[in-house]
Length: 261
Length: 306
Image: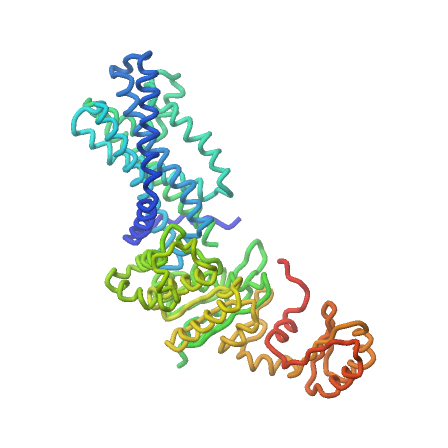
């Protein structure tokens, strides 16, 4: 096993062509992607929000569909970035060798990692914009400050994109990703206050969830969409930023070990 | 002073305690086509990866295009082009989009690129396919596009890892023709290949590697002259062993049995040919010694499944 080079990332503007390449592929294939961005959250809102919501009534002082839409926008952003930096990034790394082609040009692995992370953030931004549009058409959004959700989605996407790259860096195949979904993403998806308030689960679960990034973004997005006052903004921003930076650093070290040997 | 595009001294790479590249010295002159040959597992790919700055050496010094590698690999890449072993074109883009995207990795401006695009398409003989998607291109077309892509930055040196592997004879001929054009333009080429005819035809100089070391280095003609008798007769058919033991042995300098074929190496082939004409059951081919004979003599004839 070669030793791991934990040198700090050296970022440059050269990450931009990496981002741009992914963006152009997305534009070419945007049809199915947009259907997914609009369709899936819309189904959740209809089925759970209206369907289940009729039985539930109000949650946390909000109609259930409003409560749910503020959560779904975050979990969709998380899933979008995660899929992008697992399956798509793995394809670019291993199958298409897109990264190898980039590294023969004057792009370093550092540029590639940052470009991929920023692209994951952008995809989450697109996903959140689609849901925000649907939610506002359904009358679930309170005021213009809801646009503040978009930068939150970008941050969340960068954070989860970087975390997914860590998994991609050590993954021998696509199948390996199931561990990450089952052990990390699904618990966060179900327990971070997307479907019900965090206070409903045992205290030890609450403490665990508060150590993870999704919960904190939900805590910011919910007041932004419903017009409630924001609380604890610094902490809620710092946790996903810390996760994102740590994951970029770790992903880069692991990718160096995998690709630059 | 001679201008070297690559100069490596005592280059070394160790994987799991085993030296895969073990003290390689390499000087490649500017404007030449240099070939790196060797059986599978000889250390060619690792050497190439080190030259490209993609694998950090465990020892030795390495300069490529005047840059210290791997420290200055990024600057070196701006003046180098790579044609990798497996085409890694972007399958979601058209021919010209592939070139455009790659040019952006080099920070080449749109104006400069659009000016260069017709030449790149002409080089790849893909003028009529500019908007075609990659999936519709044949293997030869994809390889030509990969070569054109390696030229987007008008590099001083082009590195080609097995450029014609898997291509049909027509496609190979065109690639050879294009590589000659690059040499005429004054570019330096470094290539690896398993085809000895390709190396003999294209390379000004070449090195044969095995077990992580360079065995010999020189021009193809020099290597053939130094290492092998000039005439070769390949003999096969029933009773070939008997002929070799009873007669052939005394008529040529060297005999070697590989599979069912007896290779006879001679300075003067006349006596052996006369004897073979008396043995109607034996088939034989007489030819001049070539690089493949040198390669097999130096690296052995057994299979390499490393």
